Each structure stands twice: as C-alpha cells, then as structure tokens.
Length: 71
Image (cartoon, rainbow, N blue to C red; front, side):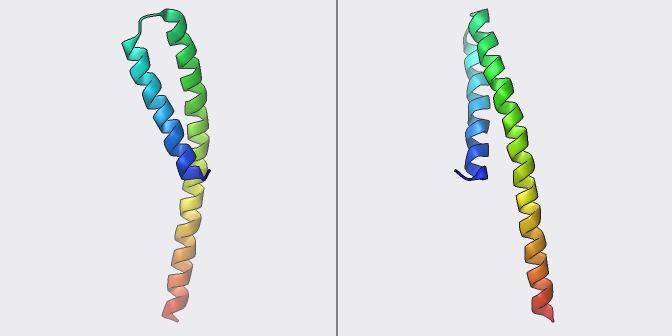
C-alpha cells in the first residue's frame, strides 16, 4: 500500500468514527472509538509528513530536470 492510499484510508477511518460517535450514546463505546480515532489521527499525521516530504522531493526533482532542460 502506498502512502497516499494509507493516508486516504486513515482519513476515512477518522471521518467514519466521527460519524459513528455522533450517532451513538453509549459512553463506553464512544470512549473506545475515540481512542481508536486518536491512534488513527496520530498515524495520519505521520503519513501526512511523509507524503509532504515525498511531494517536495518530487517537486525538487522536476525543478532540477526543468533547469537542466533549459541548458
């Protein structure tokens, strides 16, 4: 699974948990879901940082190739 797919999956998990938490009233399940959401958000942030680094690297590579093509 690539980083973008993992990011999308984690984002979907967080969004789905938000919806589910809004629809239920059982405090125990809400707490458990919020714990899972917290873990997913932490991983989401890590993946987002890696994706950002990957995009920046690709952009630098494209700029380098463009500059070389002008020579």
